[in-house]
Image (cartoon, rainbow, N blue to C red; front, side, top):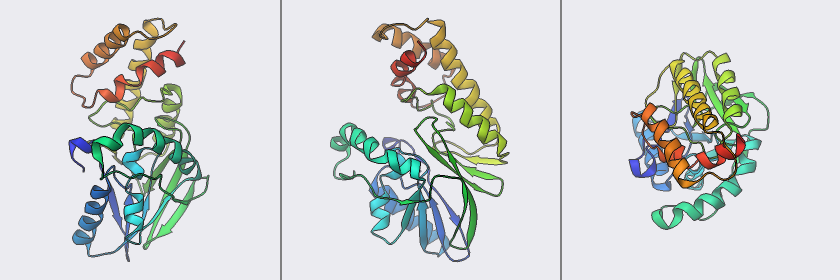
Length: 258
């Protein structure tokens, strides 16, 4: 798990008979290196590959660093398609605050294709589910038996990343996740859990949607009304961290629900 400054981002590894599969590559290249070194130290096995779950920098920023250590980094064709544009936007947001520990170039990943499939690597066989838009434009879910590794689709202990405002699509993704019948879910941030994490995400997203609809969205969202909406959501969920994830998405949700 990275520091709060790097958004408390979880990454994971799966141990195979002859190597490791990393789940995501971290927000900062230095954390990607620390993750790799920790995994090798804990297991005594080499890192074979990493899988990026969606096009957000806390998933893909460590790609080049891991590749420089001989790690192959994969994602779905849909996720890869969106990475360059997302990188350009986020570099404008973050580079000055984190330089030189922030990549200047968009990473180049190897494609897993566009459809769900089994993936065999490092002596492991895992299922990869290629999902459509939710909190991002595309997602990959890694399933190992009845354990799912997820990205921002499942917020655990934090507000949801609502930048794209696609609540209905996101709810559809949650229905797909529920159909996978996971016994345990390992999310990008916060503690792992069971199907209750899906329940919470669904209830949260519906509350956000209903709160915005109750304000009868039309025209531009004023700063005062945005503050009132955010305050209502934070009052309902005072225990959740990173409220900025929710606040910054409200103008887009407002437009989508008109």
